[in-house]
Length: 403
Ligand SMILES: Cc1cc2nc3c(=O)[nH]c(=O)nc-3n(C[C@H](O)[C@H](O)[C@H](O)COP(=O)(O)OP(=O)(O)OC[C@H]3O[C@@H](n4cnc5c(N)ncnc54)[C@H](O)[C@@H]3O)c2cc1C
Image (cartoon, rainbow, N blue to C red; front, side, top):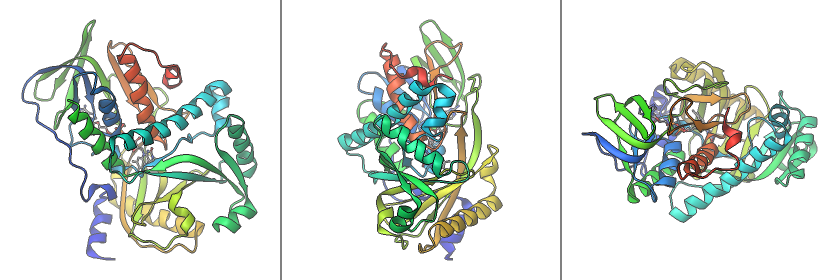
């Protein structure tokens, strides 16, 4: 292993932190200001939110870090419409009609994301991808067969793949899988940076570093107080703080955990079909993988309870070795050397759905918490739902995301 690789594995630097395309015009907040909408958090959720509002409102985005340095820089950016909880399981929790709506909404959100990236010409290595959801210790082949059927009934492009086909076409030895169309992958940091740049071009201002320490609402709006005592007066505030939940914002059923990821050197030796496929499994802990444009393999999983476990470097090494080993067991012909390994906080909810809702007891304030393996898809949905609310409209799916 080279010295660079040693260093990256020691520091836990994400693959996306290097290279061009991350720059976003930011400024310090040197005085109190007044805007239509204040967005707290310049991660991917804040970026979609600011982008969706900047043409119609004056928008200030505030972040205590440089943009995109929270959970977003750690994301492996599988842009999926499939929810962590299968449709059949989600139906048991929230009822079949709502579960079908949640799946349809996610499916639409991935299309909407791709449309925004194409329209805005954001260079973020976006590629439409299929997904292969492998039977595992949580859901075996019978459950996946029923799941594929339930999805097909509602018009989703999913089909069950039996074990023999899985082995013959993909060289994977599992009892079955679901093959689905309509997902995508991208570089999450460059996607977020591109959205923030477009929002800036439309008039949004991005202030960093600015710590929001207090929020006080009244019938006409919200006043945010920063760490150095400036006030940001806004008609509406949207908290897009990732897994760093704002004080005073209830998060029922939400749990912050830790998760790990690795990227191999470019041009790993992989089968051709993997180039446009996202692979994940119905297991706990789970493994997932995909390729990047330069032929790197990106894989992750090994989730563990505890919001700070991701900060441990010995754990990073152990989890990296585990993910690499599982990768090799699943696909013995793949050849690679790990170049980057990193970890981050991750959110889970009982349903796999996010919380996108007004803040209880605080007028004119919304909080967006994207949970689960498809957090970025939820960032898109959040910008649509909160955007509608700020425009005084109701979104027919808003009820799905109020816990
Ligand atoms: C290893 C890993 C792999 C993942 N893989 C995927 C995947 O494949 N697909 C997927 O869709 N999702 C994935 N996710 C989840 C995804 O990354 C998150 O859902 C997404 O990044 C959340 O974005 P966000 O903007 O809501 O939060 P963040 O990116 O965390 O941004 C929140 C921002 O708010 C700022 N902030 C917080 N509090 C304050 C305050 N008081 N004042 C000022 N600023 C504040 C923070 O500094 C931060 O920049 C993964 C996550 C991890 C860790």
